[in-house]
Length: 318
Ligand code: XMP
Image (cartoon, rainbow, N blue to C red; front, side, top):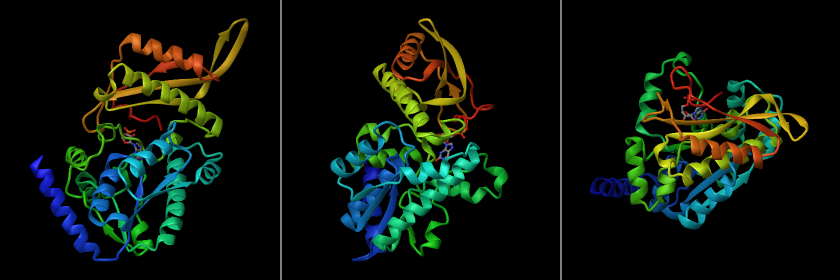
């Protein structure tokens, strides 16, 4: 891709000019496409003067922290530290059930943890994976009425920490970021990963968040995604995940009545995540996923499939 090759060369030159000989750049990494491509780009330009911070908030999917760290550090050779802050986040979330309050709590904890780590590095610049649509959105959103769900980001951080911003992706669209990722040698499974929200599993464990409930969701979600990949469906779906509902269901096992948790499965086809259609999964795939989850995840006795499009539904349940 000659256009992306040219963009890459130009971006590297700009970053080197901007950061001079000695400046340090810090950035939050999530394992998502945007922050990963931004970090690769800066690492390509200034090597280990880029310092990535990956915050494990205890709200990640099964094996996610390990997998993301292996990809960034071992495979892509990005300088990055993993901060395990699970207990901070889970303590702060105890008793919180309102979706917006969950987001606020997580956003605040994230800033606290990130700031503390970034301060130790005493960086001069903050890397952000802002894309062109984010730039337009932040200009056109004139009030809270425009935001239906407050999205988790690190807004406010740069001013508070007196950091200068580096936003090497701010003139790119998502498909261009993916192309750039491929040019930078990022594996296709990272480039075409489904998006994952900043607040993570907290907004997919409906109602109260406990580590026990998080674990049930984690196991169910891992089975769901594994079976979608196995059936060759993952790439055709815009986003797929499991949700742990806030009500229980009666069931039967042998001679006993059970009263356990319900898992909803969500899979949507979408081009821009602003609208979405529920994805018509083959019955055989649904059957297999349902059987595996009720058999393998203890404390879950019922599986439902979400057949709501957006609008009027949203992609997430909270
Ligand atoms: P909704 O549920 O609004 O989701 O249809 C649209 C897209 O946005 C993601 N999403 C979030 N991402 N922080 C994020 O970083 C959030 O608070 C958040 N809420 C929703 C969602 O996963 C989907 O891709």
